[in-house]
Length: 248
Image (cartoon, rainbow, N blue to C red):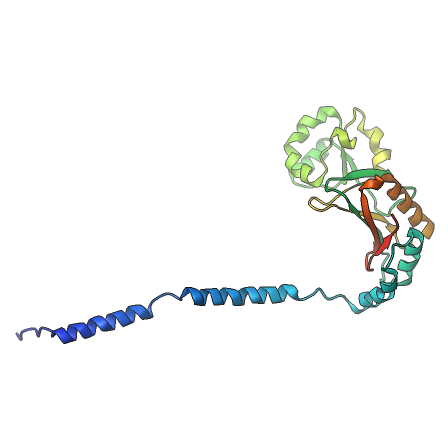
């Protein structure tokens, strides 16, 4: 058997140098490279976010026609007529008010002279309603109940509460005789409140097929229901039109 040849000092030094080179090549990406990569990613996101939302040609044409009316607030009557002049939708558009108020949480109600075109579904708590809630089904806009049924409704608080549908004394949806409340809640009574985190209220006024008089009377009733000190500005628009500021 041949004897093993012992490596020389020079060979050992050469091997150690090779190992060091291999290890250096395995070093993770330097922080500068990571930072540059992150900057490129952020730049792409910023570029994507900077791309403006593109409106259709018909909307752009309507906006161009309304541009001259944006300088000063208009009377509701003039605003309604102006919106009609730039209509292009092939369906019966909704007419809406967007009210900027002084604080988040502001709310109120008003009885409109005319319907706003939206049918309100009102339900009274009974076994059928409770059974539907067990399945997560909500097919009403207003829920009325007698005080005796409130303990049964408690288990659905997390389902109804966030949607503003939980009956409570402040909203007037609890009564010994809930059926007596049906005319009030299924009629033209409109309730409004700000967005959860923004001091703005969106209110459906009616449909474009309504007469100018119907829309005007509804708008006047809504404005009158607000505390004047709370209103900062009011805008009106239809479903497919730019908005116009109206006189407060």
